[in-house]
Length: 118
Image (tube, rainbow, N blue to C red):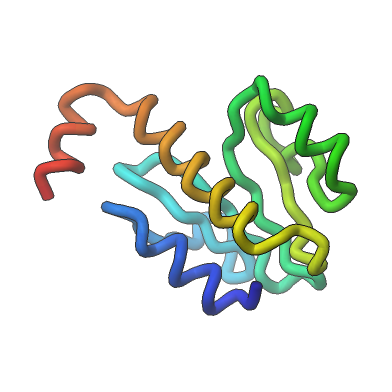
């Protein structure tokens, strides 16, 4: 998946916003100020770091060589995926949805209600 399509998908999540707190080469996608994706778009291949259910991290890492523990992140909750063409787009999209959902689930009730009300 090309970066433009990836960015479009990430920003299509309700309340998603893009930021560059680590410099112009790394885009951070947040919902209600909480990160759900980090994209090192200038890297070759592009890498995306997504939150993952701790019960699934080992499965993904053992199944796909392009999925590694989250770079500079809590290895129990985050995976870094090299977009080298070996990860099916539909799986990547599912992982993006899951990351977003996990972050939204961790928001306070008031934050979730505001998000859903918008």
